[in-house]
Amino acid sequence: MEERVVVVDDDAIILRNANTVLSEAGFKVTCLKSGRLLLDYAAKNTIDMLLLDIKMPELDGFETMRLLREWERENKKPEIPVIFFTGSDDCASETAGLSLGAMDFIRKPFAAEVLTLRVRHLLDLIRLQRDLHAEVEKKTREIEGLSLHVVHTLADAIDAKDAYTKGHSGRVAEYSREIAKRYGYSSERQEEIYMMGLLHDVGKIGVPDAVINKPGKLTDEEFALIKAHPVRGARILQNIEEMPKLATGARWHHERFDGRGYPDGLAGEEIPEEARIIAVADAYDAMTSNRSYRGVIPQDVVKAEVEKCSGTQFDPRFAAIMLEIINEDVEYRLHEQ
Image (cartoon, rainbow, N blue to C red):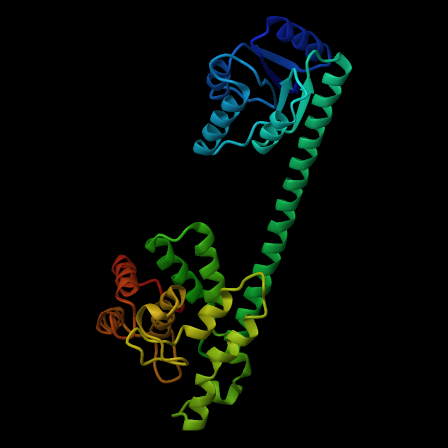
């Protein structure tokens, strides 16, 4: 595919010479006589390299480039690579051009070989950068996919400690993501809270199975072991520097909006927002899962409990979203299967 080069200069001789040299080198060349014509052209066409004269009437090269960059930002377009034409050895002009993001300067009148080599080398460099960026993005997606697989495996291992919580972490993650989505979180933040939900109970790894699965009432000592799992989970996750927020869901998902939760007795806005979301999702799944002493709680009872605890156990905003989800679940599908 021919690479598209646009040359902007008010000098007809420069335009003619540049067109001849670059066309013979295999580029698809468009010549324009002003910055205004360039801005109109760029809005409708793809440009691989722009050769832009500095001294032009009406809009000089610097002002043209500033307007071009503003248009690119407003329209979320990639920046067009720019080489400035200059007829002087003015250091201040080069400094100004480079500060705007120009890649190079070519002096006029130019030598044909110099013009061709500069354009070719810069286009090759840009292609290499794009290829490298694409490869990095590909590897990043592969690593993220592997990381998610590892997190799912860990979440399954946590759930396996409790005979009555199969799939609990995955469901809490899904409910948390849906609440966050409806509240207006970006896609990136939705995925972040999904990961937080998957690992919110990681601290249970340190709780003896006999305590987790005890069918009767827990002693004070046993309940203290259970209540220690948020702090233990946060300590495990805070060492993962790539995902610093993971520890947030683990530590504070048992805090209450009225301040009577644990481990830190935080209240209201003191509790990180993601933890307040996970708290609602966690409680919902606890009520809609089988336990040794009961089955799945009927939906109308679950709904009434969420309504009752709004403003005390739960942040009212996220309780309202959970109630919205419950009301939409007419056939009561959102529970442990």
